[in-house]
Length: 119
Length: 106
Image (cartoon, rainbow over all chains, first blue to last red; front, side):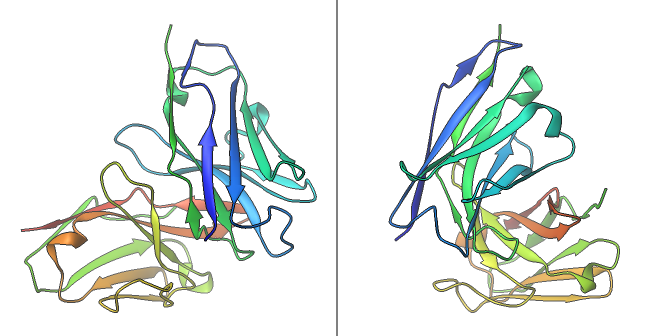
């Protein structure tokens, strides 16, 4: 059973860089049929796609966040990571990692991790 | 940018049918996907490619998509179906989510 788990700091100050890692177990991040993505959800609000990548390293991002986002992969660790620079309170959210089985939807989600940006 | 519109809330009596709409420009030309999210939990895929149910999703959940509107139907709604439901589509290399619909089982 494929599982994903997010990890990283839960509290950041404004202007810092958010760094999260998603560890994939029960499957390979190098699967040629899968993409891997990050989605966030501000408290009490809806889902907001951040970006996705393929194991080869190719990426695509939400245009509204593109200037601040980098998603990368470490196939040796079966992990992929999210970096979001210059965070503000508006970046406070639960951050999820998820798998896309090649056709533009998410079929497996991590449990999510809350990241709070506060001075 | 592409937008998906959902009603903020839908109420339904136990055993009745709930219909949740998701509207977007020519949405019927794309695939629609639906997720269920209960408080404190991660989203769960319940409908993919307009009408398909992943393994383990009850048959009372069904989907359709035509024209500008995709619809999630919950037949014989149960108390456990009370949750937020999000539609999602893929447009111009981006994932687009609707704002979500809170289904209340009265």
